[in-house]
Amino acid sequence: MVGCVTPVARLSIYPTSVSKAVRPLSDTTTTSESPANAMGTFDDEGVYTPREIVSDDLGMSFADAIDGTMVTVEDGQLVHGTVVKIDKDEVLLDIGYKSEGVIPARELSIRNDVDPSEVVSLGEAVEALVLTKEDKEGRLLLSKKRAQYERAWGDIEAKKEEDAVVSGPVIEVVKGGLIVDIGLRGFLPASLVELRRVRDLAPYIGETVHCKIIELDKNRNNVVLSRRAYLEENQKETRDQFLTNLKVGEVREGTISSVVSFGAFVDLGGMDGLIHVSELSWKHVDHPGSVVTVGDPVKVQVLDVDFSRERISLSLKATQQDPWQEFAEGHQVEQLVYGRVTKLVQFGAFVQVGEGIEGLVHISEMSAHHVDSPEQVVTPGEELWVKIIDLDLARRRISLSIKQAAEGGELAAEYREHFEVDSAGNWVQGEASAEAEAAWSEYYGEGAAVEAVEVAEAVEAVEVAADEVVEDVVAEEAPAE
Image 1 (spheres, rainbow, N blue to C red):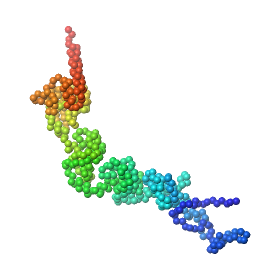
Image 2 (image 1 turned 180 degrees about the vertical axis):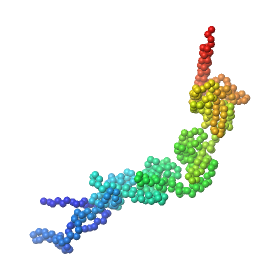
Image 3 (image 1 turned 30 degrees about the vertical axis):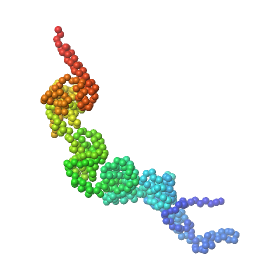
Image 4 (image 1 turned 30 degrees about the horizontal axis):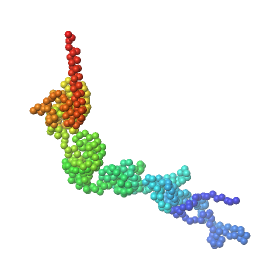
């Protein structure tokens, strides 16, 4: 019958980096004997006589002696070992434990989707963190990535305290910025990559960048970097000189470098300045992109220079003709102008009388008779004559009147060559004709002649209908014969 021996330990076939004492795996030792009888003797009949045991110098059991050659591990412990096998989804590491440790591919590197053979090589000495001493499959799970994190956090925290610079290669483009390998995954926002915002981040992949740490939270595993802070620090002397030479009120040429919801940034050739949305145009601007685009050359005026915050405020509209000033120079109170109703409010209607110029027709100036609401007289989009009854350039307000325009008056200069006027410039009103309406429409480029004819015909039809209503009313009120 063949005897069975229960194994007390798993002996690895792979080399180990842990030094183990070479000791006889026996509970006993023998006295010094010659090689001839070191293992016992056989007599003439072939009977074996074992060697004589004279002492026990282990001081422990055989099982304890085996365990003494192995390391002990606990969850969260940092261990060192040697790579003994590399698979596509895991790496085996001999740390001197009873079984090799397993490093899953996702725990090898802070980079995503890497080939294990690109991270480690056979025989390489590796530091790892014990994730779990024994998972449900009985495996010792390790993480090279988290061991790297533990080491890196200490260095990163020290550099943050010293306000030092960290460096590393860009390994990934993510939403809103870049991931930089600084021993752990550092996030570099797109707005902090350069001195001005960069739209295409792909060219930075693989490039080594130098950054300052601006936010650090180990509990959330969050590290935020700024390359712009590093660049600004190195260019501070140049920037200070640029700001010193910049004078409020002067006009500079530049290029639109970025367009955002609240304005546009302009590259002035050394620093960027901001044109707030309110300074882009004399007209109302819904979005800066409707006025300027990236790459546009512009001429701007310097409004303010903030040396402490290193910020420059600019104005685009300050270099352009003020439409209000231009309107005030070409128009006077009591003159007639043509406009379009843009908005109705409870107390009246706003009428556009020039590019970016709107005036208010108060409800009391809409008609000679009482008006309860503006809708009774005008509608948005309607075009009509109005008279300027007040022009306040300082407050940028114009008061207009529809009822006074109906009484006639002097036309503004730009209309006189298109309409019949007397020697004083007053409009000599005749009956509306299709030809006149067509000429007016052509002058403003807001409709074809055919449309103007239709408008004239509609006006005539309304007037005829009104006359008929008046006749009916008179007939009803007349006493019966």
